[in-house]
Amino acid sequence: MVATGTVVDVSFGAPDRRAVASVATQFFVNGAIFASFIPRLPEIRDRIGVSTGGLGVLMTVALLIGLGGSISSARLLERFGTRITLIGGAALLVLTLPFIGFATTPVVFVLALGFMAALDVVVDVSMNLQGSWLSARRHAPIMNRLHGLWSLGTVIGGLAAARLAASGVSLQNHLLGVSVVLAAALVFVSRGLLRRDEHVDNSEHSAEGQAPRNRLPLVTLAVGGALAIIVELVSNDWAAFRLTDDFGASPGFAGLGFVAFTTGMTIGRFSGDALQLRLGQDRLATGSVVVATIGLTGAALTPNEYAVLASYVLAGLGVSTFFPKLYDDAAQLPGKRGAGLAALTAGSRISGLLIPAVVGGLASTSLSVGSATGIIVIPSVLAFAALAFVSPAAWTRNR
Image (cartoon, rainbow, N blue to C red):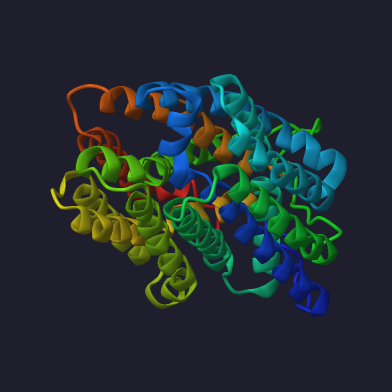
């Protein structure tokens, strides 16, 4: 082992290629799960009988429940390993999805979403660890494309949700069907995953196996995750409200706001690995922040629904590389397995606790949804840029 956290140089054989296919499928499945109901949140809001602000509070409570996933993920990984943890968490995640569709009260909605949020963290950490290990073994970046498959899952799931909503298909039947399809995909996933976890050098750790003495990388990963999730979460969750509440769009058209953003993310992530090799990490990061800022500003302030859709695509392109880089750095951080990812996900989940209530509260005032989201996302993307470029060594691993 080497101190940078890279894995031993080994040949990339057929088992590794099968593992890549399995991990890639799981990324797609995870994206499709949440995209199946997020475009129909306005419908869910009306079904459980709450206001837009009330829905934001409920989502905050659910994310608070989900924070337990960040707290327990490292322990679960130490006890069961990434393969068992991923399979068990993903199976429960798929089985819980239909409860969102059948929820008619705020309590049922909060409990179902909270349990899904906790499971999502556990699965998220497991699949990113396996993906990062496979990327290092392959000696070529694949993390952007893996996250691209997550985004592709959100695009397909979001398009299906918008189409089914426009066709009058009930939310219950929709989510039951999605659950069955994704459960079948998990059978394929379980067969190819890495059966043995990689380990990194613990020489920088105390004898008791505690976290590194220098906690700055963990703190900055948490802050980076908090800022990145604000930009992504607001654009994902509130795109439909931007179109329905500000422009009076139909449910079918409103769902395209979510699809536009995730389409941009998908394109950006599938091209991100090639761009990284061509431009280098610094130039790619600079370009990503500039494009994201332009797109997010347009999505929040443009007074035309079609221009808003175009802006969401541009915003997705810029934001697309934020999390793949953070996840790869966190996965390769020397020390206790999963510590970097636990810090990253904890930061993003804690930030996610506040965002729904804050945006919902702002949108319930005289502000438009566009203004409410702009107040949140534009400063966040600029702060992320400052964190990345003022002190990049603080949250990147040594190379």
